[in-house]
Length: 291
Image: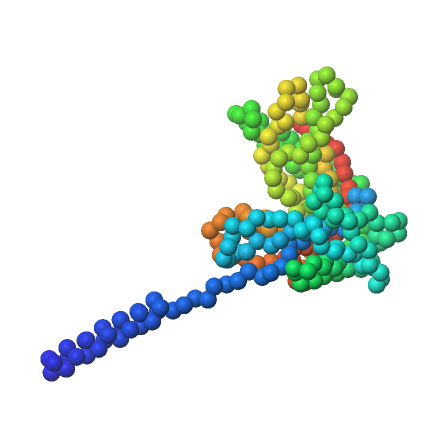
């Protein structure tokens, strides 16, 4: 009986050892990066009827991650409307492809197609419909500079509302600009970003009735040159489409989580490419005195 018990114990150890070895020798196949381009393409109906596309190589998540982000300057980038295609021109200074549309080309609810061709990549394509233009003149509220113990780091407190009585779900990007005056030129205002380093994106959750409400606090690093004093904040409201909102919201969420998270993939809305083809149509603005 004792010999049988010893045999059972030995067989049990051999079985555990075999399973353990099998697990150790399991080969995980290396994941390969998709061979695509990275594209940011925006149709801006308010900024001079411009269409701007940036085209770069995509960086792999696995394998050789030491590659650098490089601009692709020899692609054929085209915008189509009603079956007619127009080629964008690459500009060295801005490192992007641009097109200034003729009058009547950019219209509300019109459909626009994007096509990017390059011999080293599969042809990328996408399509969007330009959202209805929305501009509001009813922007109210106040912006306060919160005092702190430090002279270099302060906070800006925003309490802004504006009317949104449109019948569609609008998405907004808020762009604050700090206005400075110089003691030697009191009649001239120099506007600069507040250096908060993050896109401000708003959706319908900020809406109550027919009013949008945005309340926030952000770090503020005043322009450090002698003689310049912050006196006002200019608020720009860009009416962006859902694709613009979702893409940049995702990018910022992943960036804020730090490096130690599992890979999250969001290809955007361009076939055979990573990135976004989006639009904004309507820019409202108002300047507030800095209280």
